[in-house]
Length: 205
Image (tube, rainbow, N blue to C red; front, side, top):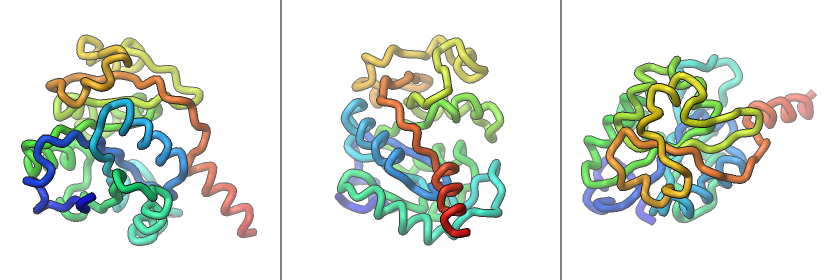
């Protein structure tokens, strides 16, 4: 797989690519498993892990350096259709909304899908222009333990209830014009970066 960068737009024309953003502090098998599920279920050509230099809603304390998180994420991804990158550094963007809009401009012939967990579906109204992300590209939401999701649950889901699609249409999502979103019927995975950091901290004592 050609490692994507801002000059590879022609080579990605017509491809369907899932975008999974986050701090990846650290990346873990949960990230990998949902990416593999998305590749198959959404009929994607690739999944890009967009490792954030610094999430504006998270404290910098306890955040590993970007280079470290990128290196560890590439070890965890270990798949020729999962690319790990610091795209926000290349684009000089800070917020997800701005990053996704910039990617749409840079790769006009590529079909993108924003991938996020059910926890983020609840939190997205607090993001910078979070609710507007649904109008930038289609959105696929992964089920997460302890988070009930549906087209009528939460502010974001209620706001975009008319653009909700059943999970059985997942293979068509990348081709739908935004706003279009659905909740995937993925297997639940209890792994979280917070839990992993907590275990690492206890071992280090």
